[in-house]
Image (cartoon, rainbow, N blue to C red; front, side, top):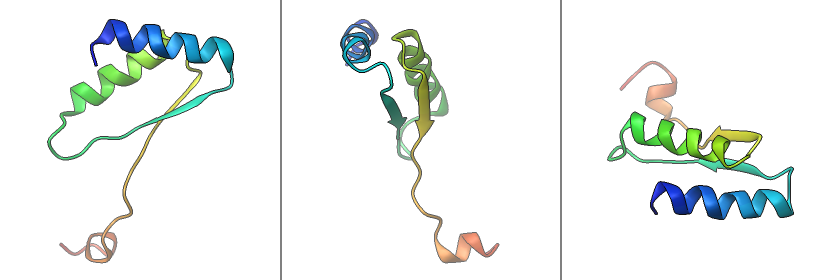
Length: 66
């Protein structure tokens, strides 16, 4: 989705539900900059609460292994 369409679409949603919360997720193929830019666009669209989704850590990684 292009940035202008994202902002327009999400702005319409926020007008209907000002308390909407959005979680942004990515995978290893998506760069940090792209995720950051998406979050900025969501804030520009009026979303007050933007968060990051994450997968649970694998046991080995959580315990310092890996």
